[in-house]
Amino acid sequence: MRLTSIGSVALLSAAVLSLAVPAATARDGSGVPSFGFTVSPGSVAPGGRVTLGATGCGAPGVNVSSGAFRPVTLHHGRSATVVVDPGARAGARYDVTFACEGRKGTAPLLLSGAPDKRIRAVLSGSLTDLDTTELVAGGVLIAAALGGVLHLRRRASHGAS
Image 1 (tube, rainbow, N blue to C red):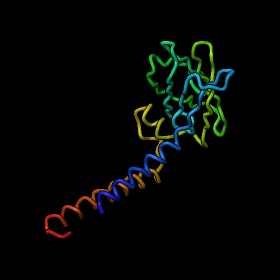
Image 2 (image 1 turned 30 degrees about the vertical axis):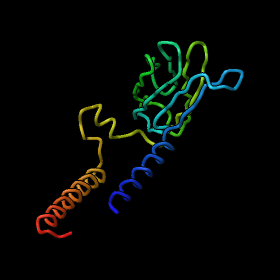
Image 3 (image 1 turned 90 degrees about the vertical axis):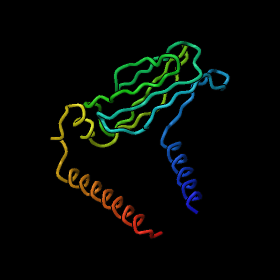
């Protein structure tokens, strides 16, 4: 029973992750895909991080540009992580353009509501941007996790199943 539930969780997680990564494909005039690219996640707050990837390009580098972040080159099929400009317009849709050997393709990047406070806190080296609610919620989650671990250890030591 335990192996079945682990397998079910793994399959469900894989399905959710595959839906969360919008993929796009550049097409030439014949409608046949010429190279593929991804923007993950497809929706992020200003100041958040986005991972860019490209496959199937014969050139050593794929140039990626958008109004939401500085241009970047993906070298030899490697992905790159970029930080979305904290001043980018929240709620807007930006096109991410991938250029490979004279061909171009685009994928959407949606900017969610407000700038991500956690990213700013990490970048500035301080936790002062977090509000009380976020700090209390984090503390409750940590306490619940520790309580669960202690409960399981106590059950195991008493031989309960």
